[in-house]
Image 1 (cartoon, rainbow, N blue to C red):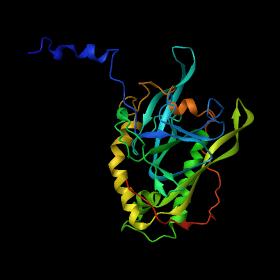
Image 2: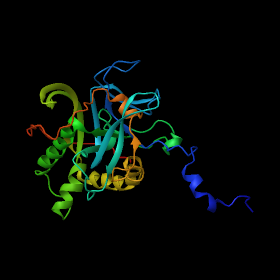
Image 3: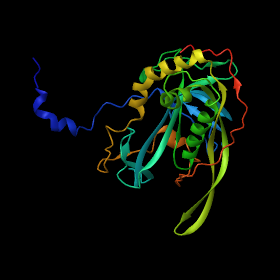
Length: 304
């Protein structure tokens, strides 16, 4: 028989300072490096295994290809604060993950997560993990899954991708019996996405004064159609990894939809590497060119 009955010590458990560290997620952040350090060159795509890791899935690349699994909109509210070292940080104080979750005030801003399988455009196949990553529950040979976080001035990148996908899907034969399901679920998984870096000027007002800044943003382009027989494979993979996606990105359990709970958002790999992300917010979606040629894909290797 156990010496101590835990039933009477719930309050102590709640305030315990020694807790299990949250395990790493299975999705890895792609960012644009803002300055040179070590083997990282400024102005290129980077994707590291972890912030302090020397293992890179993407290093100094100007293009990134991926097969979409999820395009997820959510809202979040930040406030300014400082960490124990006196550094300025953003503190997440409200969060809404579900589509029917209402924003409590106008300070809550929409953000987007775009996630998928990292694609090797030379080998025409999904890139695989070369070794086990036990902390994240990843085995050698598992597909590498990446994500882009589109917030602030980069929100327009997500708008543009969705509009490009819907426009190009108009020329394709529907694969389901529901137009709503086709547009929301099937269409985003019918294309290989090429991502490049684009520098854009954004105007904004600070204290009544007009200012401008240049920001590196993501340019997502659906360049190839995926063979119809592979689309269902992506749907099944999206179902398979949905619990992992929600576990990694849904902060509803740690941040309330009301503004009474807080979590620090700085200090993780994506924020530390995203040196060129502007803190200014905009809901303006830039005009897009919908005349890009669409070449059908061939010899796709979807060994998921």
